Length: 171
Image 1: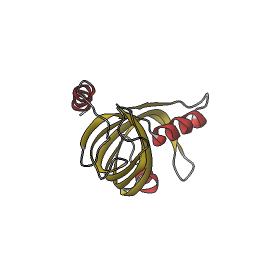
Image 2: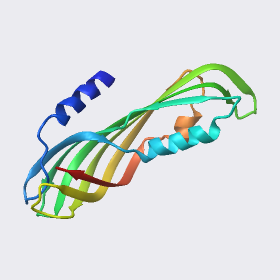
Image 3: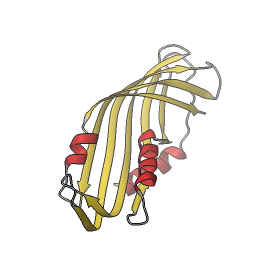
Image 4: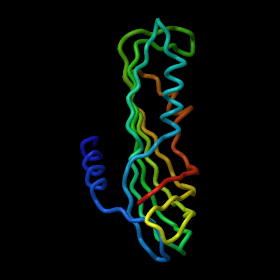
């Protein structure tokens, strides 16, 4: 899956990307982005790490693919698909009963989102397209773990509708 996503990213990166500047203009976009979830997991990892326990976090940037159509020169509506994965390695965890379990453990968490995205474009008619909008859709989380604990998925990472603010710049 990582090889496929990397190939898609490379192909999109070297393809021609246009700004959304005209009514009825269709724009295909692909790339990678910043993730607040990734930032929150990095901060949590730094807070949890101690001299007795170490968590290693590997994450990919958000991979994005979208299609937008201009409703007028400053407003567009599109669909978007995003994918991101996170991998954790750690040497101990604590059960709800307080028992500490030690060993070598790994978790793999993926997030996929399919959504509509209404966007406002700040300046029409330019080659540079700065935009602000929403991504309203459905997020699917998948967790695989070397432990038998599935409470984290149910408690923190449930599949659900989502609404996210987005901003970006295209050329």
